[in-house]
Image (cartoon, rainbow, N blue to C red; front, side, top):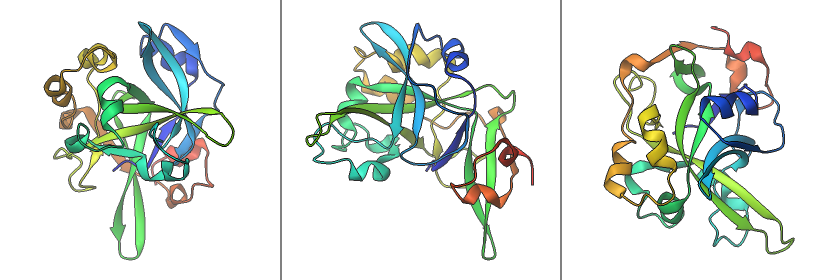
Length: 223
């Protein structure tokens, strides 16, 4: 799974990197310990434009009666995207890219949970495969946009740390993944395998990451 990640760059920086035509979002503070239900930047397409906007992390399907299940749907397994009711509509027409400077995963050492920071060796942003949905709160009439990170099998690099990892889209897949008229399920699935082992690096970081209350640049320093 992917339960915490980092978004520390500006909306404009992510928009430039991912080729967004428009930025339509409130400004979010740099977040070094993104937790479920936090608001995050994501890139999606609307009427042919590539837009960087903000979404709540934890997908609320359009048919939900309330928003309470958002924290259950922070991740979507690539194996069941086309079948699972919570994700199949979004997989068909509402796919996005969620920028990440890196993500955290944990191993155990005795009774301790040891956090590891995983990132691209060049320190370029990761293009995490994502899904999004719009939901209208029946009690207030407010519209919410939410998202989920697609997870896949681990590569050999990640396997000692965890049995799942976020799907990282190669740049040549961005256009097809974001294209809302692309319903080629088999093609889309080919983008969601584990990335090359040589792409990623990792090191242990402070156990301060374990608490969502801690959120500062020093969390990224090697332990």
